[in-house]
Image (cartoon, rainbow, N blue to C red):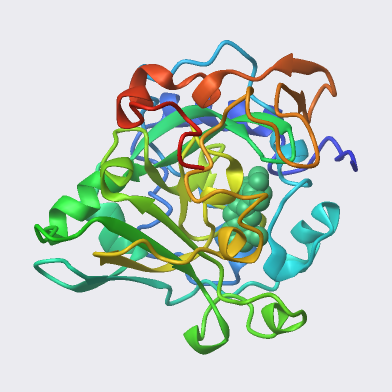
Length: 312
Ligand code: MTE
């Protein structure tokens, strides 16, 4: 893992310094999603986002430094090398990005990021994040509950699943070209059961470390489901569709034995090729026991009466 210089604009010190500035001078700094954000994706990523931190989601561990989280990314559209993603994703084009709400909804709609920032209750939440590859981090997302957006468009009574799609060649945003370089079945698709999508933990994130979401973390908007393995937290979403039947998803469709549809964090059910009993923190390299539902059982255990892995 590469280390960053002192003046890295996304370093943790810069993050906390900026938070102090925000609290001292409210109103002086515009919301990232307000007007005046034209410019390349890299400039957008530096825009601060002002949002109060929720106290409902406390975490008993220090926040992972931004410089480490931002240099160790899974974003296969930019290749399989985690440490190369940040550099390659700088080319991402997020201007004019919209998110389409489609399928079994009362009011199909398309929103740009400014509209979402105006309509949705933006807050900051510090969540643990656990990858299926047995590494973990703790990061402060800013965003809004997916439930708020689904309620805004109205969910039809026969909807059972929510399907999410990342940019692809035809979307005109993102990084057309990269995703065609391999045999993977692009675009990346993920899905949740409707009750999972409506759970209060399920977040659509538009920011991280008090700024707009950087490209390598899934700019400009991504899903965060902290009780599931990280591959469920799809990045750079362009389309959200309510469906009656369970959608085919990217990793589950490729390797169903290794990547379940539900993919709830479960230390007692090993991956076919490695144990899930512990994880490695990407900042310190130390290991900790993995908790069932990644420690979020109080929020989600009732969704799975037969346990986290009864249906993988
Ligand atoms: N979303 C897309 N579109 N493409 C991806 O390759 N990788 C997933 C998830 N979302 C992925 C994705 C995996 S495997 C993980 S662990 C997380 O993103 C990593 O998120 P991070 O880079 O912000 O830590």
